[in-house]
Amino acid sequence: MKYILKILLVLLLFSITLNAQNAKPNIIVIVSDDAGYSDFGSYGSKVLKTPNIDKLADSGVRFTNGYVSASVCGPSRAGLMTGRYQQRFGYEVNNVPKAMDPTVGLQGEDMGLPLDQMTMADYMKRAGYVNMAVGKWHLGIADCYHPLERGFDEFYGFLGGSRHYFQDDRDYIRKDNAVRRNHVKQADFDYTTDGFTNAAVDFIDRHKKEKFFVYLAYNAVHTPLQAKEQDMEDYGFLKDEKYQTYAGMMKSLDENIGKLLTYLDDENLRENTLIFFINDNGGPTYVTPANNDPLSGCKGTNYEGGIRVPFIISWTSVLPKNEVYDSPVISFDILATMLDVVNIKAREKTQLDGVNLLPYLLGNKKERPHKTLFWRENITAAVRDGDWKLIRFPDKPAELYNLSQDISEVNDLAAREPEKVKELYGKLWNWEHELARPLWFLQTKFDKQVIDKGIKYHKVKK
View (cartoon, rainbow, N blue to C red):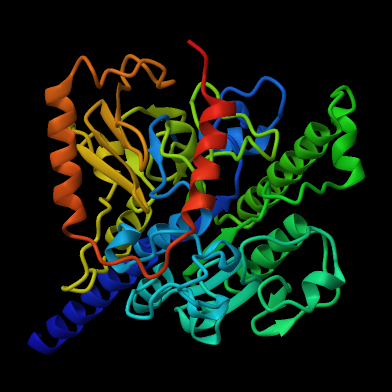
């Protein structure tokens, strides 16, 4: 009898373990590139139609105060991929060799996500997941930084920061711009937005009986502005050809996300798939028709238009539907949430800066996920503490805003609130003492041009 009970106990424990494993969701992180805050229907666009992304928002939680950790591509992706302020390991500015200080002598292959930093895929592999990176990498072009060396089992995409959407011989000969399957350059491929979706769906289809993690980072709608003719037809009423092209690119992005969601529904995978959608930084309104309204600033600035982005979470079997969450959250909360969901701990010596968002979204925690958030690129920096935000500049006095009353950052309160300025400066300086020395620097001239453009042309009028 005791022997039978032991067998039953073993079977029971095995069943519990199996159920726990099955309860772990598949995970997809979708990243769009350089879209404006208001370029999506669910975020207020009156011109651009994004029905599939809007449905994704309706199926879960849409954040109105969703942030990324940097206002430009590379550092933002480093923070997302590691769940940490990227300044903690020196990845402070974009890894763009042509914009580097020439006295440093860095080459493109010298710059990438430091090898001692664990990635999303490193953690997911520990949890037993099969992992794929699709699309834009922009975390290093040297072989040691390749996605296959950073926890991913497969890769289809390009290693650099931008490329043409159609086949182009100029991209093929460059290490950073060539589309690759794993390490092999691809000479024949689809319009990149289509091709990246197809690669992701193919991977999921081959691994749908396993637990999978897909990092799907589109290069849409980053420059160069290139759209398929059929995607521009719906926007023939737009007189500006550049805007018409941009609208076509947004249509393709939305339709491809819809294709992915339809596949998950058809294969009965949707309910147990945790999906994150986020844009990598604010729209670069000085070079594209991106719309950041009602936010001031743009990509490359620490105004809200540079760092506040569309951010959506959907997990239809767990999270509430059609919810709007107004407290500040940030991109590195994605990894923290993933780790808690799959029951994996970060390394003891690794300080994650994100928090698991699920307790807040399910109503188990009522306080804000973050009281204070920070940004820095070279000297330019910002801190948000509650609803107060301070922006520090290299060549003029700091500015202070109350975001609860002034989302557009048009009423600088620094002169009226000197004690608040002092308080936020103190918080910023204390945070900076925790950071590593930047691994590389941008030329001051380049940095200043971006900041000046953002202020001069994209400051919301009073």
